[in-house]
Image 1 (tube, rainbow, N blue to C red):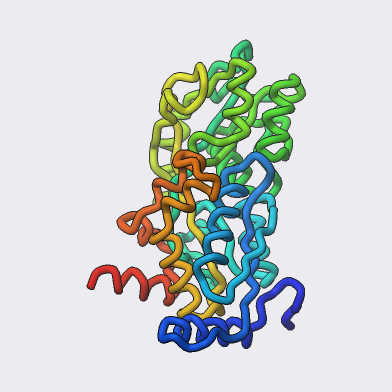
Image 2 (cartoon, rainbow, N blue to C red; image 1 turned 60 degrees about the vertical axis):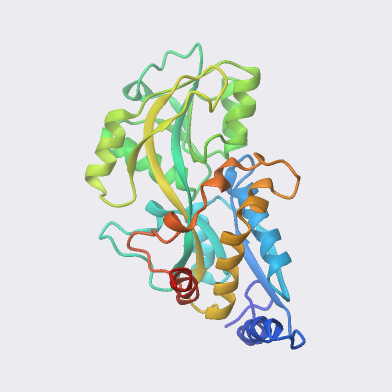
Length: 318
């Protein structure tokens, strides 16, 4: 059954989508549509970039309002999408693709946005020098049901490293690391990410290289992973560090009308600069958003594009 408070009315969406087409021909707009977009926890890029995308959809798509829904991030957003509690949501690609390479049938991709990098952060004076040193240590794996938890657990299992694991948001992880309540934190996020940037500005940190661990993920789970580098310019005092990257995608429920998703896709790719500025007039406010582009946007691996998004990409090739 449809929950009017949490799920968009199918009839309202259809009417609003019709209004999009009618509006283009000068006809008056019809019934508005209320959408909910699952983002992420405090201190995460998902929270900020999701908010900027939501604002620009509301500004550019006639009759649409978009409410952002804070969450644990990737896995949490997928659960909410399946339940119909949100209609749009951000996720890392590895959390969506099942181990057999398939993707949830009731969900599809609007587009690929940017790649997240897995950070393993310790304080500068930590005895943790390499990944294996995490054994028995107090380690935050990110918020519960987040992409960080999903990927870091995979990495720890492949490396057969047992830890005293905690589930803390990025902001809470950074604070706990600073205060000595944990020994290390994982964070799968854009570069740079606010919580780690703020920590590094006031306290010396180190990033632990994940060279062989990245290779192990790529081998064990072909498709969503690629070896990558966190640049030396990302965080104060931290040199360039090898790690693994995972693409992030914007998901939509399959029952959203094609015309509506077409308009959402158009908004993302024709207003990338404004999304990156996050409405504050600062061109580098959301640097991850500058990686949004048509060439990579269509690359969602085994996750199919929503028909409305697929139509938009086809039209760009004409």
